[in-house]
Every structure is written in C-alpha cells, then in structure tokens.
Amino acid sequence: MAAPRHRTLIEQPEYAAQLDFLAGIYSVAAIELTLLGLLWGITTNAEEYNRVTWNIREAKSRSFGAIPPLVIFFQIKDDNEVLLLWIDEASRADEISQRLK
Image (cartoon, rainbow, N blue to C red; front, top):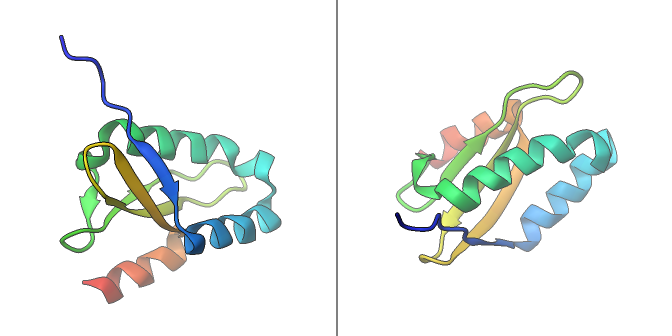
C-alpha cells in the first residue's frame, strides 16, 4: 500500500493578510480547528476539491458555532506543493467564486 501524500502548503501574501484579518475578527483560537480541518484535507487530498477555474480549487468548511463557514482558494503547484491563495467567510467567498467563473 502506498503511503499517503502530504503536500507542503505555501501561504501567498494575500492569503496571509486575509487570515490575519479573520483572526482579528474571530481570534486564532476560535478559527483554529476549522483551519486545521481544511488544511489537512488540502494537504492530503487536494485533487478531491471542486475547481473554481481550470487551476484554482476551493475547500469549504461547515459552520461551527459563532464561526461562519470558511473557504480557502488554492492551487496545486505540483506533486509536492499547494499554494494557498485566499481565505474568507463563505458568504463573501461565494461572490468571488462567481466572478471567477
């Protein structure tokens, strides 16, 4: 049996800035579990997520209490790396998805 693949996640500046913004609203502790779930899924099963464009995919969380669903837009760079492009609340991210299509 082949070992599971774990890609390296590379935060782009826009992703990092938006993550800091969201952490300022909800606190890092509040969004940490949601982020861990999304990032684990991306690092281990990036190909399983829906495409928004030919090279951008999105990973969506569910709502957890006071934390709204979050969406991470990402790009599979190669077999070893994934670029984290943007993160936002799902309500705002849906608008971005529509504009990309």
